Image (cartoon, rainbow, N blue to C red; front, side):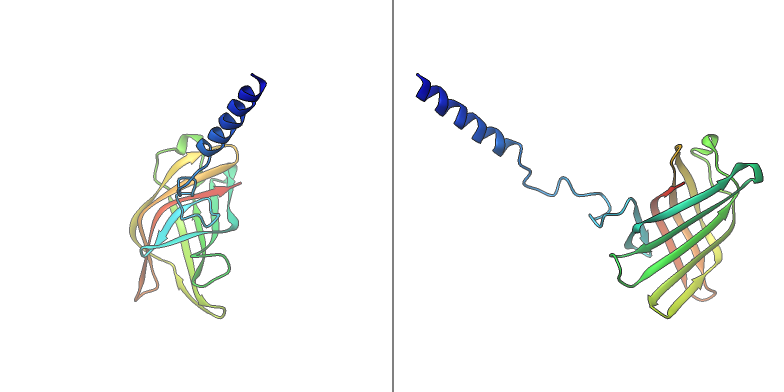
Length: 162
């Protein structure tokens, strides 16, 4: 009887280990698995935050906020982007509202010494999707910046830590 009980438990453990094994890409992040905390595109190309370098300085007493992020298609490779957006301050009551942007600038690097600055707002919007005690999440909806002759279209979600 002990032999059959032993075989039963061995079979049970073997079966359970197979049932707990993943065999697909169902545990990949929605941002393509590049260890980013965002799902974001620039002109249709997926970008993620570099080493979680996306932060916000929000000073409600002075009614200002600055959002900054470094983005790239993959860690340490070009093209990559430095983005700065100055706005009115964001509070818990800002959820679901559009940002009031006072200044926006994107530096688009294609090589170490080659960057184009896009700082002329052409359209689209940025929505405050979520505000927590540790982060603010923004949703970009066809937000366009140009350099006078070319334009960047920003879409998706970025999470900025305090």
